[in-house]
Amino acid sequence: MANDSDGLRTPLGRVRFLGAARNGTGEAWLMHVTSLALIPLTLYFVWLVLDLLHMDYNGVREELGRPLPAILLLAFIIAGAVHMELGMRSIIVDYVHGRSRAWALAANTCFCALLALACVYAALRIGFT
Amino acid sequence: MATTDAAAVKRRPRPLSPHLSIYRLTMTMAMSIAHRITGAGLYVGVLLLAWFLIAASTDATTFGVFSAFIESIIGRLVLFGSTWALFHHLIGGIRHFVWDAGYGMDAPLRDQLAWATLVGGFALTIVVWAIGYAVR
Image 1: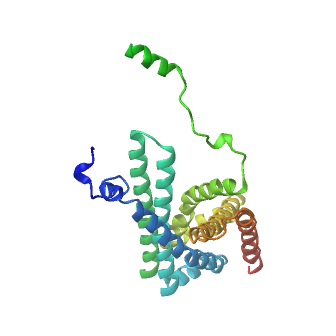
Image 2: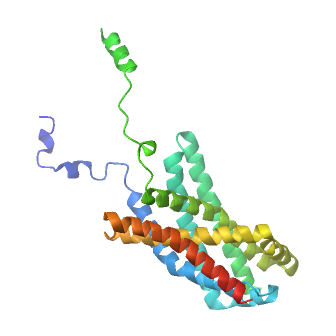
Image 3: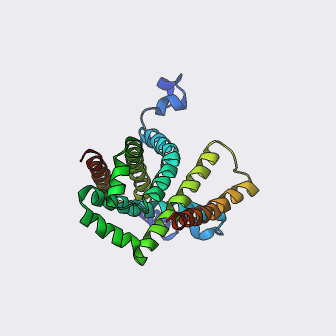
């Protein structure tokens, strides 16, 4: 018998921590956490946009300079950026194969990081200047 | 002899598992791909938010350029499309949470949930745009 030396180990015990699926759970978990956070944050964001819709430049800056809109907007940006990075990652893994997959994944991460940084920078600049 | 066996194996097409083109399109399948498409759309649509924030953080002239775009017909169409994608994706996500919790996977309910995603996405979009025009 090939498995004599593993006689007392279960099939699960033999493969645990060996396979590729080590960080898949973390990604799925983060996707669920950001999804859940984005439900109220998105509803607030839509509310905020409706509020800002008919304001002029100074009104918009004053509103986004208040703590609550600023903090919730920052939360929306960060949760959204992580969520879209994970979502586009699953699309890339499904449709892009071979070497270009690595480039696509890297481009996705960089795009989402830059977008988040640009939004956070702008939102903080509105609040602090 | 081994080579002739290999050639014989090569000539015979390997069995394929049935894929998308084999199955009749169902509502849950349609909403599954719609969830992915709206997600990808929002990936691009979020650039509007970045543009808005950067413009608002710069000066009144830069903000005016953004305002002029968003008030134009093309700007309104892009914003309307983004609103719909946002609500469709939001309700689709809630539907996935319902399924993850183990509910709503039986035959009538799963289709009703899929229809609710489609109808709810359009309904919320229209309600929000109606509010947007009403409060001006």
